[in-house]
Structures are given as structure tokens and as C-alpha cells.
Length: 212
Image 1: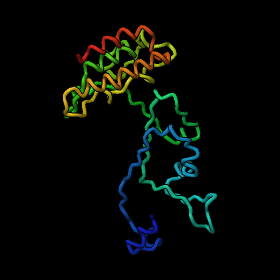
Image 2: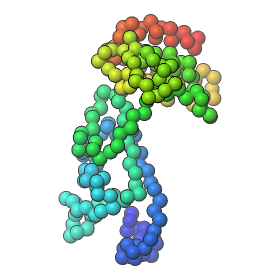
Image 3: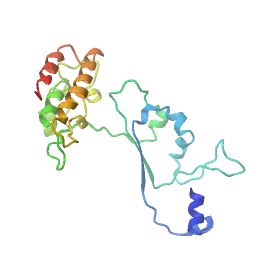
Image 4: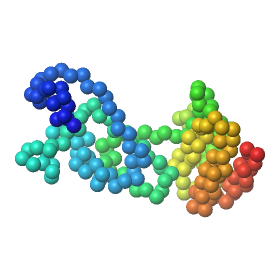
């Protein structure tokens, strides 16, 4: 692609190297990055993450050609779902090349242009945390485990995200459909897997009447 850019721009590499070019920033988003074997997927790109803009040789180099260069204006963002225990963790060699930011569920009722069921979100959240109001008022507050959450799990790892409670459809009853076919089934699965205690069943039964 870089070679094609030079041809289209009628430039030689030497000209480009001495020219002052304002680079646009590009973002590559890899959703659920931990679902793959990253060592195999990224390959030699792992090393390029530490040497931005530098030409690196590798096993596919032929007569000094086919070197790998990761541009300094390319930013890579990977998302991870900590609640999904069926996927592997990222090993330390890859982890140390990324910065990690926790994104916890939050009430989006105050966001303009977003139809959010804050009441339902609070009810479901109470299955995971006991200090919901405190956390929403101050999101730096330490999450307190709800009595219905197993001691083996941290709330931030299994708490249902806010995207479940966003009404993306103009059709009446769309949240009720999501509650019936998405939210309640995963909560019931949490009980089977031991994430939620059996005492959560009563609250889930109450949820079934929420949109009635």
C-alpha cells in the first residue's frame, strides 16, 4: 500500500523522507481482542508496537525487502469483555505493549439523544453491587458486592453493561423484548454457573413482571 501511495503521488522514497508531510491519525479498533490467539494473529507486529516508524526485518524478509513498519500515526484500540470466561487472557508480552483502561457500566439517562431505561438498569445492577446510588454519584467509589453475587467474583468483572438498557429501536416494547430474551436468560445462566447465588432467583422473577 505504501508503494502504491508513492506511485500515485509521483514521489520517490528519498523525496518523501525529506519532505514535511502532515500525517492524519488513524485508529484500528479490534473488538474483543482476547478472543484470538494474539501471539499468532499479531506475529512480528508485536515487536513493531515498540518501534513505531522503524523498519524491522523478520523471517519473511527477502534481500532486505518486505520489512515491517508500523506507522506512528496508527493507533490500535482493543476491547475486552471480562465477563466472558470462555476466552483466554492476554499474555504479559502483549499486555505490556498496551495501556489498559477499565470501562464500567454507568447510567446513561442524562445523556442527550440516548433512550436509556435507568430504572431497569438500577434493578439489575442491584444483583451485582449494593452501593449503586453511591457509585453513580461518585464513580471513583469502591464497588460493594451485593449479597446475591458470589464471593468468587468481583462486581466489575460480571456486572451487566449499560448497552443492554439502551433502546435503539423506535418500536414500542423493544426493551421488554430485550429483557425477556437477553437480560433475564443471561442472569439465569449466571445462577447456573455460580456467578449469582440462588437468592437472586426471587429478584429475577420480579423482573419478569417489570414490563408487564
